[in-house]
Length: 325
Ligand code: NAI
Image (cartoon, rainbow, N blue to C red):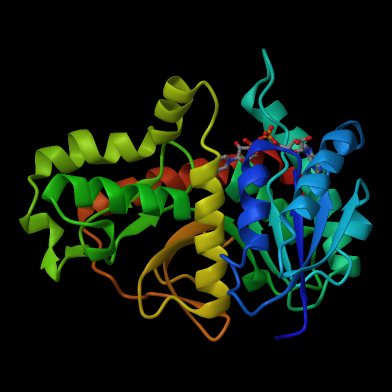
């Protein structure tokens, strides 16, 4: 058995965490030989509910759980953390403007960035899930100047997985046969799920589907999937979001075996001419605990228009909280 690693999870009493924490504890994220200390953060009013989650974790008698910390203090939650998944965020309340939402979250993620900067392992791998995830990640990054910006990422894997599943259903295959999918940009309705490089069983997806399906069905379905789940379930995606977070971290920590994945990363030095100071999802492969951008992919005029639209949204989100960066 390896020695335990510390995994901090925020919003630990919320619905995504109710799936996420138990899967991490079962070894789905870091493998069956990696013990974990779970460091769970909540706001003070939710500490009673978090205590219930801890009781259930104890009742699972997970072999890989080496310790559990439950706290409402970010400085405690991020102490020596090797991994952090930031799920807790302020949801949009009635009558709340987009800029109010951005600012309310900026307050949360600046505190958490500072706490990680002060207390976390210097090589911590951070995933921001709480929305608006990309801009929350940018705030975290700006408040953690001593951490490597490459170690702060935001979640696009749910959008990536949704794309694999839609393509597989369309062509009558399985999602494991779909490769080289890319989702660019923001985790929002402007995201660009791009099939131009994707293959199924090695065959180009663009040869298997017609352009009308791609533009009029596939792209909107993936972009609007979150809203469709809320409509159907009466609550936002939780188990699938948790599963995507597990996939993101597992690929990053253990490698993606040559497979392309989509990750929101700090855009500095990107090869696609995207603004260099935002968190933007790019095509990525992971190896030896590091991610690498897949550079030099051909970009059609259509793709460029889509990539620019989602870039501009991220720039405007950044501008709305510029005074806090
Ligand atoms: P939820 O409302 O069930 O849980 C959120 C939890 O965060 C609550 O227990 C709340 O008390 C806690 N929290 C709020 N502020 C906190 C703080 N400052 N520190 C620690 N904990 C705090 O929400 P759910 O369904 O678990 O979703 C969480 C977030 O994930 C939402 O922002 C949602 O929009 C986002 N999300 C992101 C996805 C992505 O692909 N990036 C996909 C699905 C959801």
